[in-house]
Length: 228
Ligand SMILES: C[S@@+](CC[C@H](N)C(=O)[O-])C[C@H]1O[C@@H](n2cnc3c(N)ncnc32)[C@H](O)[C@@H]1O
Image (cartoon, rainbow, N blue to C red; front, side):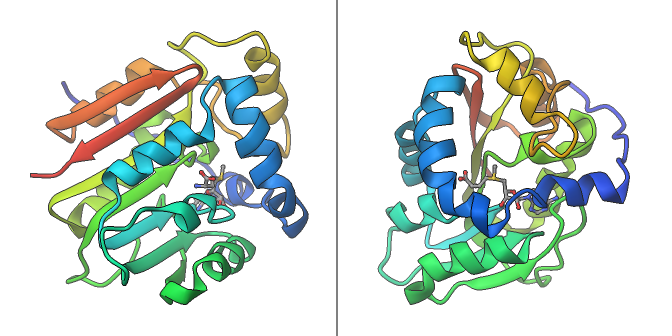
């Protein structure tokens, strides 16, 4: 299977994907988004995503778009002294998530995941998380998937790339999901996924990786990739 040519969105659209995460939104995110919207609207409880996180998280870990750091705080790292790097376009997010795991002295980097990450040529990770990130990114799935090209050179052999994303097409939505998708994609809404389909996600992953686990729970696709 081959990947299609990506279409690049405008810079303002990229910034808009991270802008909604103000300190006010971040203060209610864990309860409202992870605690209510994920299970009730998208049909995928946060504990399911946490189980995936804990199956795959490694000692040298990169989290792209960490949000409030809810997953990071609960992650079952295979060591007491993991090396953590958090990447986000939003400085408030980096402060919030970084503060939550401050005891682990994470490196905080303000970056756009749709551009080369400038992590240092020699830098390698055992795991990379992209939890609930892809549906915030603008552009078609081919463009969104360039995030995988940016992290791949930094994944150690045997390392994992894992995460989840809300899809609009190719999944079985619950009763509340269609209206929520419409509202959350509206104007300044945090999502940008009305064209995201399971088929396109599968195709972009299959065009890059061999060892892929893709599962669907409600409106959410959960992916877990092992690098040779
Ligand atoms: C829906 S939140 C997910 C937070 C967290 N991973 C979770 O699952 O709870 C999306 C995160 O991606 C970040 N983000 C959105 N677009 C980005 C981009 N182009 N580059 C880097 N981070 C981005 C947002 O600032 C936010 O922290």
